[in-house]
Length: 157
Picture 1 (tube, rainbow, N blue to C red):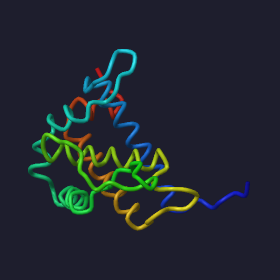
Picture 2 (picture 1 turned 135 degrees about the vertical axis):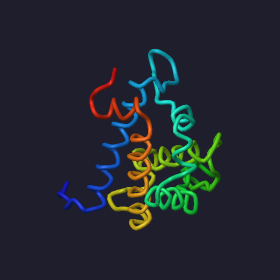
Picture 3 (picture 1 turned 120 degrees about the vertical axis):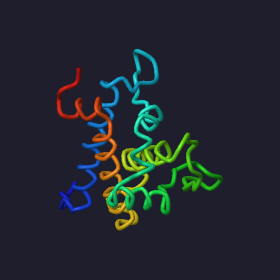
Picture 4 (picture 1 turned 180 degrees about the vertical axis):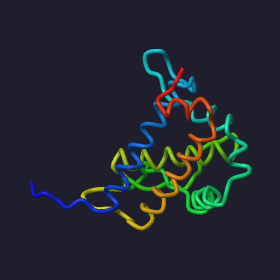
């Protein structure tokens, strides 16, 4: 199989995956958990509720990232009558923080499960915009939670 040059968008996707994975770990180690003891998962809704104020009064950069996600939300890949298609419907959510973080999770899912990439990027500019805004949202959310930011810094209790 021929080698392909790594594009800037490939590197951005790697940065997003790395940050997302680290954030999920930090949520779990900080007690934002759901699932069973044998299959623990990060509880994004509980985390969102704990930092809701951040989303109600964001700084300019975060407000722009949130606005992008709300105006151009990532779609969810589903199986329709004619095969794979994209659904516009937003996920159930408790508040804006919960919605935006679930949309960041959707971006991760679309990337990880191949919805946006098959050897080349589908809608590369949109992917770039979603990844950049997602990184701003993740990093802001981490910083807004004392216990998660401690875990992120390697000082989890």
